[in-house]
Image 1 (cartoon, rainbow, N blue to C red):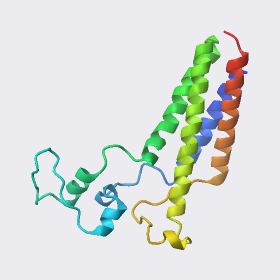
Image 2: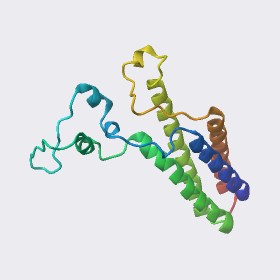
Image 3: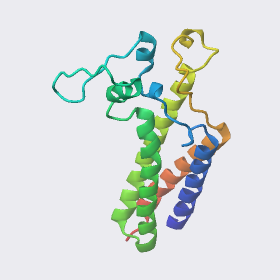
Length: 185
């Protein structure tokens, strides 16, 4: 049963990779200085310079890109964090599950199951965040028409691949939990 979960996990990872390849989240999009500034600040007019050091030093010769970089948040946004965390947790969990499959150590199985559950939670959060972003960018929705961000496009995924990836992930988490419960080391 552990081997079935391992193969299913690899299948789910392949479906997830296909989702990323066919989406508009490819790494070939360039980041401009305008993307570093929040949408509210772009419509409010020029962004004031914020000094890097604690001393209040004004740099009136700073180009807009430097001002935008200084004003950008240090912590990445939710979408960027989930874009990294979901596949990273999945790969680490797959490695633990491979260890469990090879040596049948229960601790490795429970760690693999925990990482599979954390990966599923991160994936659901990422999916929800992307759905909300898509609704915010929907031109048909009149209440969000003025709040659209023209620089950062809404993410788009193919529905069938997302459904396939989600179904495979659900089955993987359920079977991983059952395998960790049933198999003894």
